Image (cartoon, rainbow, N blue to C red; front, side):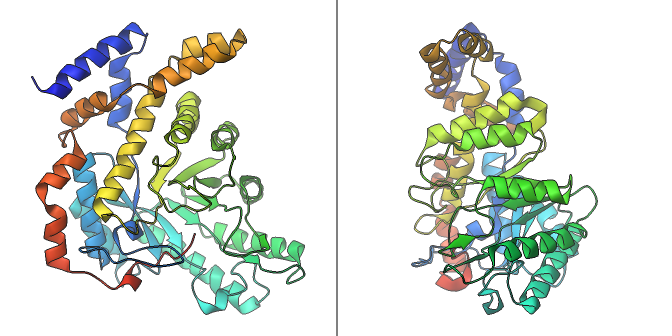
Length: 407
């Protein structure tokens, strides 16, 4: 009997004694799904530098292969988000077939209206009518791409803002933004969703047109039921309680999804769960507590893997989400509610922290065994030498190959 099996049996016994249905927890872990981003497999970096990684993906085909490999190793990454034009291709039907043949599907489509010179003053909110028209046309193009690849999510992040007081009329920018989003919304495929992301500052230095969850929520309400809010865990000010934002949005039925990452300072350049694993746990607990109301929430990774292995970094991201979800699933909700209603402040806190402090790795190893994937994906990956094989086969691509300078 392997060590992890013994550890799992002991953990299962302890959880059962705490009133947790272990089989029900395992069933939910079996169907957990986390989307990985195509750009995370290519060379990507920060506004300061991009450091090329040997073996990083250079083409959309290599990105598909890498995403499929991460899914093969973890069992919970069945889809890959794409960014247009970074992943632009002449035949999206063939692109979709290639992904499906590799064992994954194409997920969210992310428009890019922040890198071309015409968007210097913004895209949908720009004072330049030509830039606004081109931005809308690109958004509509991405809606057509959604149909071709079978995607049901348009993930919208805008770099729009101003650098100086008086540079532009802030109310007019709001009106332009509303118009551009409404025009895009009209072209959404049936049964799809537009997820509206926000960021409290940057790259503009004075004002940001989508600065917070309230603004994105308001835009979603104006657009209609197919519009929801996307929470990027790296796009908040210090001290922001993201779990509270999640609780509000999911209760209102407008939480569309996540871009998971960690921020030590103010952006999304770190692997999710590394800087603040407790924050990730509290977010997941709000989602678990919401039950069916969170059934359609999309879980996506959005990180800048700059100095680490692309594949290992992506697997660690996925695993950290698995750990946070498993911990959230083993919270004794009955005891927690009882303590909360009794006003037992620290008693309630202890119930939550008992779950957080539980080592759920044996539980996840058991689930992986049942799914037919390595019980320790990172160890299996390192032992395989696959990174070295990719480096030998692909070489080191240009540092400029991955895009993603900001956002």
